[in-house]
Image (cartoon, rainbow, N blue to C red; front, side, top):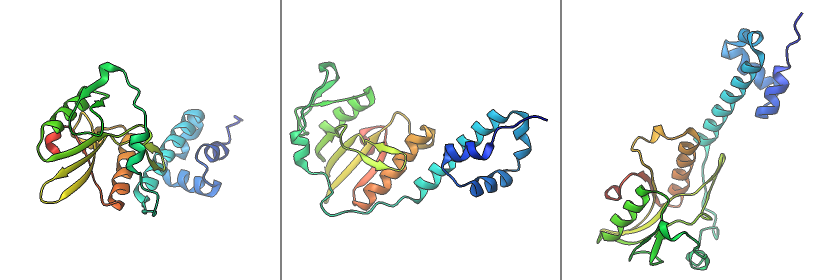
Amino acid sequence: KVNLPDVLAYLQKETELTRNTIVRILINSGRIEEFPLNPQKFMDSAARLIKNDLHKLIVDGIKYEKIVGQEYEMRLFEETEIISYLNNLIKVKKSVYDAIEYDSEIEKRFAESLDMRDDIKLFVKLPSWFKVDTPIGTYNPDWAIVKHEDDTLYLVRETKGIKDFEKLRNIEADKIRCAKRHFRELQVDFKTVVEANEV
């Protein structure tokens, strides 16, 4: 007789689900008979898959509500000291500072392009303290933009090197999905872009 590890206790500790829920998941998976073949691999895989599905459920069900007095104020930008390496700064005219820190060549090109456009009135690389809380961790979008066409538009943009949103890492894509809902509640246009002409 082989002693098998307690799969229910392990998965309960890893996922924080009830034993009854875990039993239903394992039975409905149709793969419980694989457990004795390689118990540790089975438990690790089951924990990972359950956590991924839990994250999806949480992200899909999240709803943000605006709380009066909890919006970010412009003075926070003014009070923040900018500490950067000089080789990661680009001079700009249409920002709250005369230079913007960039993290990648994509961001550098994006800032240069925005700075040359007549319809862009102001843009800022959002500081690291500007975070959106999500169920799977905080998210820091890249840019806040004020664009003037017929009306003034307030935009938030995330720059990525790929157009296909689904090719991002799962956790990153889920955080961006949460951010979309957050900014929708604030009535701020939020999108992921590659180039400034997509603004």
